[in-house]
Length: 230
Image 1 (tube, rainbow, N blue to C red):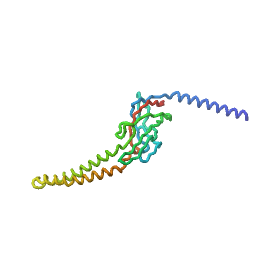
Image 2: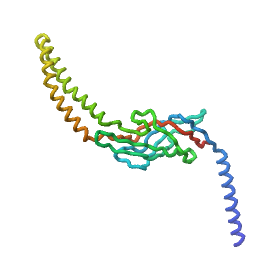
Image 3: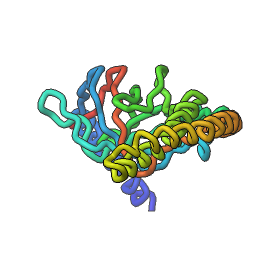
């Protein structure tokens, strides 16, 4: 019985030594390739992001869309997962102030399963603010601009219609009567609309900012990334 136990212990010892040697050989074959600063990577959202629904610290995953190649070698394969969290979020507010989300990219999962810090900022996106957040870019000035455009149409659209109808009467001379009268009548209506809507916009909330699942964003590397590769 004693010999049997010693035999089992010896076999376990040999297995551990062999496993350790295999690990050393695998680790010896692993090296790193550096992804330089300025590299632009396209990512697809696996989770939606929304300024009204998300909270501080909520997690999200993204996926690399195209292979990232350095020195003719694929360093970050297509389909690699990037993980992050919501660093700051603001829901839409009154005065037509839009929603805002700041995305923090935490790490990228290498082909070896290692989590590597991923320092990047969003780029090439019309919704990026001066400090790197994402916003719907609406405010009270945006609302007033929209109100002004609608006000203009209240006058111009009927006047244009009157001008065109006037061309069919009296050899076209009627348009010089119909169009000015229509403009004069429309102007007070437009003025009332502008004042009313400008006041209403004070109490309106701005638009949400959202990125749907499956949408893509581009990020730029701001610190070198050393990715393990075989």
